[in-house]
Image (cartoon, rainbow, N blue to C red; front, top):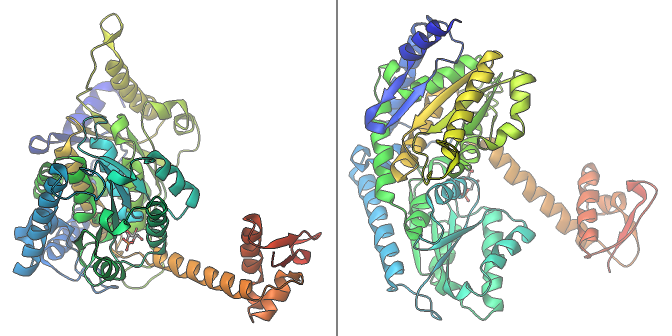
Length: 524
Ligand code: PA5
């Protein structure tokens, strides 16, 4: 395309939203001029579904749940006064609690103030809080330092605890789990509890819960007299819970402006509720995803924010997009194997890594650049009249050009700066794009049967481990013999794998055989 035609296309399709300080350039996606008109019926159906969802329809039919994350930033939209009050009370509780902690009115028994936060949760109960803490935190200036345990990896937990060495007396733990029954989070809590107790600290005086009322974790927190409990709601999904207590509590404790985050999300919702596609950036994103992937996930979504503060955006969006859209069945139960793969880190760093393949290798992706106008702290001239921020800007625009020059598609989302309001805007923007895309491809974007299946499968493995361990004796036995003993011959391979794990960790004795089937195990 000649430069004038490209410049015209850029201006024709640029979606600028002044109220959000945001612009979306879709000119480097290769859709035809008729595409948006062709997709009008489908996107209008998506608008209609979203309107019903926001009114409180059971949009998550498989779980028979409402989908209410949009109410979190505008409680007036909630379908009942009870839900509206719950949201408002929760935000008020968070603000009061954070103020009390900062002022030392809520304090640990052995120190004047809590200065550290240790957040324990996984998936939707971790990725949002981690993204926001990293995007908006200012080391040295934050009211409290926040660390995360988001795995049942004992070595990972030990590393996080090592960072808090000598400061556990001033550490406030937040256990975040919507369901209250996630083993990874329970395990993290138990290991952290042990660390507190081993230095003589009373864990109950150092911990709060964010969970659904009446869940296992809620009951534990109540029975053990934890400092406080904050509600999670049935009608908010894990990956869309950043603007509930899940994300707001750690952010408020860190000293981030949660009002602005909520206001940014509410403002974005207002814009993206609009049904004029050319001025609706969430709808345009969804339509571009549909175009690029053929509505079948044929291309991967590469997120390239040119800003260190947005490094974790890709991980956050990876969950939001892939857990929402990665579905085997459509809403009528037909096999569709849907989804869009998401990956990315940040520019210009990635230009020295996988961008080589993007430019020259397999063309199986489309890029979403995030361009932040305000460079921040950009006072040093690295060359006459040129700053590091000029380079960052130049690299971003240059990479867009280089990719386009080789027929690689991209979009560019430009924001003014990375602040609390912008983060709220970005969260809301992508949440709604995912919802629209779910409608376009006719899947339920709000359940996660694959995640639930993984949880069940892990429980079955641990059950086999316990049963096989109970049959271990002083005499060596193979995995096959143990499988027979517990009446689980069909699971011999899994039994072998758990025995190898136990042996590698010094919990049982192993004698290597020529083949896995000949390796024997016995009690130590
Ligand atoms: O988005 C989701 O639903 C999941 O990623 C959950 O957030 C994750 O499994 C953790 O669940 P919970 O918050 O119930 O502990």
